[in-house]
Image (cartoon, rainbow, N blue to C red; front, side, top):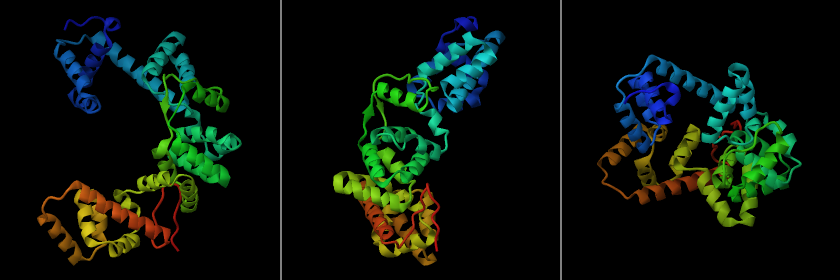
Length: 338
């Protein structure tokens, strides 16, 4: 490829020259995060480069650095903050160009200011809003933040908000922007088009995994009286077999005693090394030897049988927790054993 001056290069050519300039090791790490199609196009572009002019290399590296800094400013303080800082450093024209390029390609999530705020401050800000509005805001927050806020809401509001998060599918950008402007007038409006997928079961599950057991049980009981199928699906997603690592050693030992050993043998077939290590560390030496021998010489089994065994173990873990016999360490609170 005959390399033209930096200002005339296409985006694909700049990307190729940037990877060449960064060296093979860094380029290889970048490749790990690209799609196969992108890798093919970049590889062809790189292969066509005969040499990189020093001036082009310097301009491309400088442009990349400016974009990286601009993206960092956006993630730290939002679009307006990035624009203000960049204008002081690079001038108005260059700052506007960088921000426009980034906001056209990045998914700049709304309510960025709220994710950096204290949960109690947010609570004071939204607790008098309609449950649908509260659900919308919580869906955009980090799960740990949303857990703390949800737990502090009045009980009737808490249950209603949880239901609305679970059943929320998509919300128009206009509605999100309207709520966002009310909560934070300085934050720029959204840049994405169409509808945005927020809320849903996964959002509620992450939030509930961070609240205390009493709050979780109250919300699940409420959902169960309104929509039993929804409640069952939430419970199923809240604790998977790999989450056994959240049990303390005594709880693991209790689970091992209460479940069918054949189920545990099956369940461990696809378990992570961390789970296996935890389980084996809470068995007797002879039992570990027996399990490992059985696992080594057992024939192939259906994945469905393994998953069903794991589900039976999870169900027993949930029952033991409901009975107060074991403790599951949760992200949003410190469980104290007495």
